[in-house]
Length: 271
Image (cartoon, rainbow, N blue to C red; front, side, top):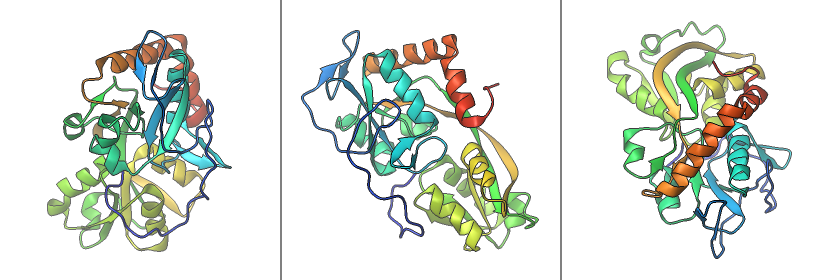
């Protein structure tokens, strides 16, 4: 996810009207006098679980016909409902999430952005229990014959800023002799593959697989086992909220609701 600005190569959807709804949260700044969830857990705005995320990262969070939807959106909607709240979504640069600023300054209660749990991020804020397993994948034009990082020697590899894919690309750059090209978000990086600005792009397998469905001129040629696990971020030391989220996650998995949400967005139940 992004922490520096690059020029947009493709337009995102127009700004959304401010709104909040279970399953249809829209981006806005948060103000309010604070409140509490069921069980007394404190939240920054009465009646709401305020979520920081970074668009667009389909199928986890993205714009669709004036609404913000996705796997993470549905999952946090369900967590919020279990807490007696509704979700309110704030679309914010990922730099504010990854640095911990948005959480630790109470701009948001939680951060849910298909975000891998890493030691660096754990220095900035706390994570819930893992809720999704991912790995990295390589996207190329169909017929490129690029099947590994070694095949990229002397070529360009696109990465999304501040992601674990970027870290993986940088860790293997010296051994494979490619140039790393940074992009602010997922749409920019995959468009760069389509237009030939880069020879390949690396990102999480689920988002690239979703992109390939509607773009037959590109393909995933390989995956890299990295052990990525997504977690929901909370402010450092906010144990009460973290414990409440973990309890809700467990309930969703025990009742089968998690499997239903997963199958809705990925076409199958989790293994």
